[in-house]
Image 1 (cartoon, helix red, strand yellow):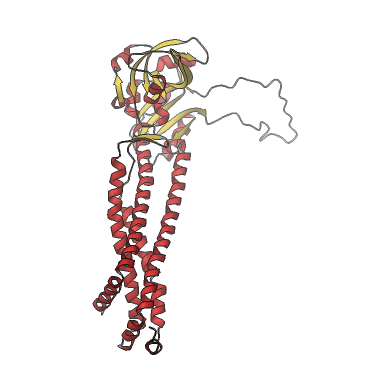
Image 2: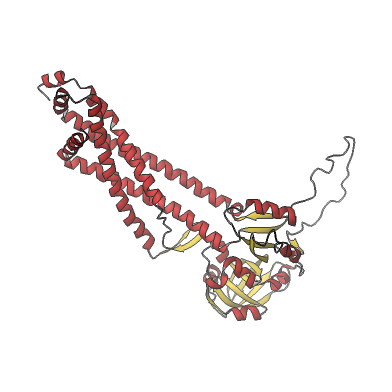
Length: 422
């Protein structure tokens, strides 16, 4: 019986080829757009996470102390206690990590050396860079190049450089590509660095790097000792310590544990990029809403063709019921028609989506996709997204056939066959 119902359903659809093909084409286009859009948004998120995990520190030990002076100095005292404050005006101390070498030794302890793979102390300060008539405020970051390379792999991201010159020359700089483009800096150029306080220094460009993270490519790297001098910090103080851990996707408990041990704020890369990750989540909700909306529109197209089929095939349906076809069998036949239209359109849309994804991924254009810069669009090829969108489209198309099929099941053979207009 199922084979017979399938044959009748196919003949119904082929009997109105133009309308059927139009509906299938509409379902295919909507499926292609949904898969491509989802691939783009998910690809961007995956690319962002991959870039951050490979380049940025997984945990950053900040200079913010976890045990600050209490705000309410009367807390825990007698209710009748009185406090007087006289000339309580102090210069705000910069956030810094003191005795950072002792903290580095903590990471080599047996309980942490397998979790913390690398640690790189750094010093950050805002400076003014001047070359000829060009000047630009930027972030100068002092690092130990070998330790920094273990965190970000900076050596592999150098476009033009002489690492030996950077290591041996006191005033050598590694310049981010964005800074190099804005100031027209090239390898071996001279640039003057003017700190907020202290004397200016003439430095030499020992290399240009490109990581793909806009915030990193918009700064310059210097030797840690030079950065400490520029920032006015003694040898035992740094702005923070960057850590690379064994499991960057599950690092919250380790960060909280390190806060207790070091006494300083430890920020995970998820916390540092919470606003960006939240934006991706909102985009995901929008894409999901789009899937539901377009799927419903496709369902209306499928329902339209089936309503027309029921209207035009009323006599055939009446004859089928007279020959012994039950109402359930007729409902199944029209639901089968909706399933065929939805499946054909969804599969065709999936094939078109593969082509559109490959097209976007192969476009040789450099785009700044939010916080990262990449050549070409970051597209996701996860088969799960294909099956999800195709499955939702087929389900909606099948459900859209319920109303027309219910109408067909309610037709009375005698009334239909008496009506000469049908």
